[in-house]
Length: 334
Length: 257
Image (cartoon, rainbow over all chains, first blue to last red):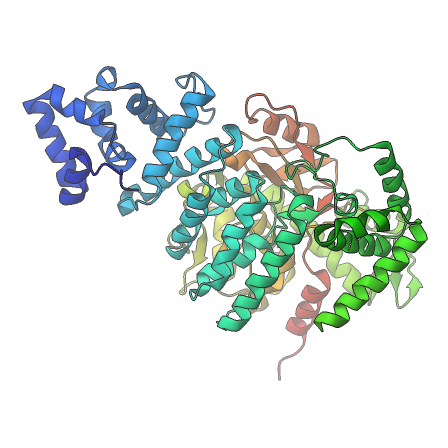
């Protein structure tokens, strides 16, 4: 990501010189004027890749005492990942607000950069760690579009994406699935295959733009219909070849009540009337529950008055009306 | 209960073929005592599953003792005489070596290999199949092997990557300890794939051979700050498609024209 105010000195030199000459230039600068060189590391416009490449020099010359808070903490965070601390200690990050600010800088200014081959694993590990902390601890979902973009960019280079996909699932954000679904339309089969895997959809290797568009439209229609009543399952690529990231909560779908996509709990307490309806709903066979939930959702989103009337009707009538309604819909769209 | 040819199978007719305390006996006793229907087309198909389950358990012990270490995918390594390390940390079989030799090398030169827990499960399955199938058949069927957790599985064992709910747990089943509140800086501790060893213990690569509480404690030690959810053993299992593998086994044993 390019800083809106243009590139700072270090970033310009990194891009112009490449890794080795850039580091050499920085070492020379340190010799000539250590103060100016370290001031450059503290530039508010600095992008993370430059800091990453200079980490060995910062360590070697022990420049930490000259660094501002953001740069020093980012360096320490990187080192904890590069040294592979088995029990990471992030005590240098004093609070969530500071952590979020620093890790956002690391990730948003670093995610678009491809490290040199010899640094790819270390750099990607830092990006994964920053994204995972931001999403799961700082609850920052604004980075999810960049996370999705990074997953697919890495996948095209056959690099590891599992930890980032895990991070994406852990965000428990239904909208993030829509970001992935956009890759169902890609002409690149590696994109489509991964999108299908992440979303638990069947993959067809042949590229048919019309079929791809249909699959995308169907998925987005399903997502929009069920967004308020899906819950993330916690499944990941470490558990299974075919993770099912989300499951529809039929009770929420039937009652028209929102649940937390993280743990499936009601976002608002149920009223006594809703509890009564839920007891009845739970008493019917699975197949009827599917019908009731599907019809309820359909009606709820299109005609709230009719939905209220339908919900007030006797349970047997609800099932009868729902079955007939869904059949009519099916005939209509056949 | 065990059903063969639509009839309840008397396990007494074959249980004498197996020593007391053996994996096979344990499986037979669990299946026959269970109220659910466990259907086989023949006693030989049942025997095949018993043999493969025994070898899955044996391969778990063998891999545990092999010196094969735990490393995250980015730090994985393998013996380049048999395998190529892939950019994502998986291993692909070299074209100039036989699959059986390459799998066996992991157990002989374990210290030359390191990977994550799910990849260890795949290695266990291949070693078990190598013990059950004639070697030539194994080499003919399981070509172009890739060892990379549950991704890019050979089509003949693709089902091991799936999970299913079941009413009965058997030695040789793949189970999973989930750690829902894992520290995001150590996602490799998000859970542990294990093989049920049948004696109340499990083999999980990186943690070892232990009872469930040891795995749960180890995972709980890697949770993020403030977590209130404990790691737990999921109620699902992963199993190969024993029936299709048996058909392959029968075909491989049939005289070639």
